[in-house]
Image 1 (cartoon, one colour):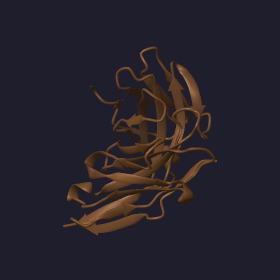
Image 2 (cartoon, chains in turn purple, blue):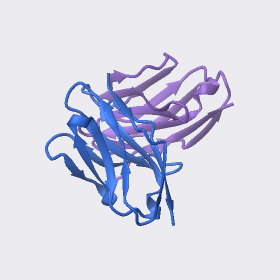
Image 3 (spheres, one colour):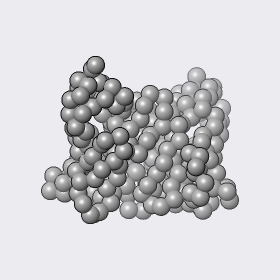
Image 4 (cartoon, chains in turn orange, brown):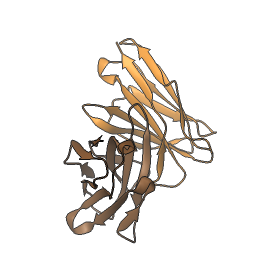
Length: 111
Length: 113
């Protein structure tokens, strides 16, 4: 069974731009969570989607948003990019609560 | 509020030596606990998990972890480390409202040949 895939793997954007990252979960998994990983803050939870509805949300500004489609694929969007948004963005999918499988991540660099 | 502490930022061990990575958690109810490993430039791979029952859990790659409620700990162990085990290790606790995990800051493992 294919794992979690994330596209693109690497991205370079300029301050003020917006970006959309994509995540395809493992087949059959209906929950998708997003995390931001930075050297200073570590791994921080952004939000979780389950059956197209946001089920949990972390403590990030409204510039960070997401959505989930009927096929469980998810996208996250960051608007008005700041230098501090440079990070590895990880997506995780889950069939059951509390067992998450992570993708390889998207490395976002904001210049 | 849930939180996880990994006291050791970096650990160096010789190949073949035993390993123990420490993890302490704070959680008001029965915790769901996890250990993940991350190789450079990669995502996180689940090593093992604890939900309930036997407090000693076995995982992949020869790892095990022991849940000790009295000490609020979930330490990861391996009897004999291989050079391929060099990576970053993360302990996590699951919230009780879906798939919202709280991660520790990680322990970087270096293995000396």
